[in-house]
Length: 102
Image (cartoon, rainbow, N blue to C red):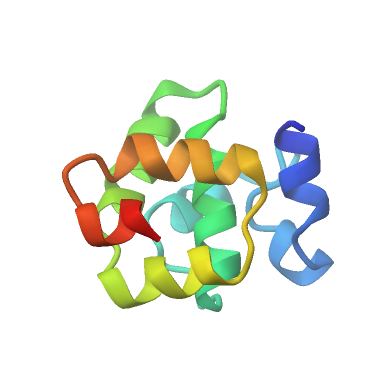
């Protein structure tokens, strides 16, 4: 599984915000968590951006993912995230046992 699998797991309306071909400003907004998405889609979108080739985008998305409220993260984890998203999430949320335990 890869970034392509994560992208494919997002509905087209949400995928457009994180697609590698999307405008940089749109991707930057998504990395900051400024796009209104449901918990699962928000988590997947941020995980996609955490795996991007742009270091600044990766840093922003990782910080945003690590700072998401526990309720959003546990809801996303409970929804059945793909393995690549779980790996990214686990790395970003080290030290947040309630999220990791899910």
